[in-house]
Image 1 (tube, rainbow, N blue to C red):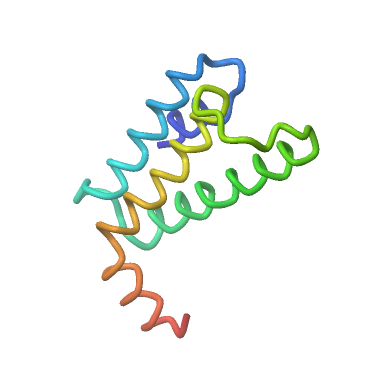
Image 2: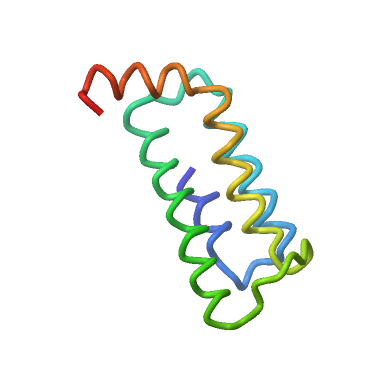
Length: 102
């Protein structure tokens, strides 16, 4: 996961590599049964949510805040990973949060 996350964040990698890394992260977090829920999934979701927010802030500062799939495909891939993970793991994530007191 760490290797994929580094690929996703590194702007020197081609966009298609960064997009594929985001897709692999999302599908692994969502479907892999060997990944521990509390530690790995929650920390990866935290990173996957914070990175797009930073990306948006940087784009607002550069005034390139328009819908251009080619320009922002890594951003879309990162958020897709979050949504994909949440769709498949929401019951587990919420049950853990309720036990911990949110």
